[in-house]
Amino acid sequence: MAAAVEEDVDLVGLSVLSGSHLAAVPAVLDGLRAAGRGDLPVVVGGIIPAADAEALRAAGVARVFTPKDFALTGIIDELVTVIREANALS
Image (cartoon, rainbow, N blue to C red; front, side, top):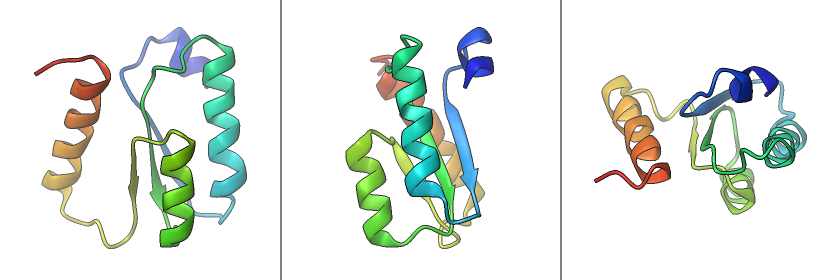
């Protein structure tokens, strides 16, 4: 999280395969807000049940990717869309 703020990234991507997504992701979101970067979009990937994905999106996650999302071109398109939306670009 500190590296994301220091490097002035456009997007934070988290891969959570441990099942700790409901604890880890909100901690990152809170840390970004505390660092003044609550505007930075966060995407999450992992084995995440649909109900948990909904909770993560409600908490502020821009996109949730699961093993069902394997079309790499589509995923990259979504990442670009997230960055464009976060920066009010057309």
